[in-house]
Image (tube, rainbow, N blue to C red; front, side, top):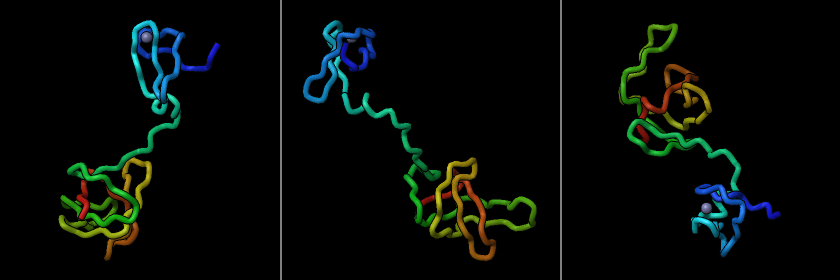
Length: 113
Ligand SMILES: [Zn+2]
């Protein structure tokens, strides 16, 4: 038997490969061998409040006043945050803000500059 994946549509095992596509002879379904081959989990995509993709090193602005836990400080709307670092956490931005130091923000409360 071949090691080709079964048809995702009808689960036939008689799949064959044709020019980078998998083809099912039973239901005629064709699909990309490339997509099927990558078992890698998709890399997380970080998006800001309006859907821009964020990357490490980006500069963002804060879109609402953010109260700081455990202090009276508030990061004001419009505060510019340079050189962000994206992390896989609930607060998914690590950054430093002038006057506040190192802190974590959520991507949904920032906008890419
Ligand atoms: Zn099929």
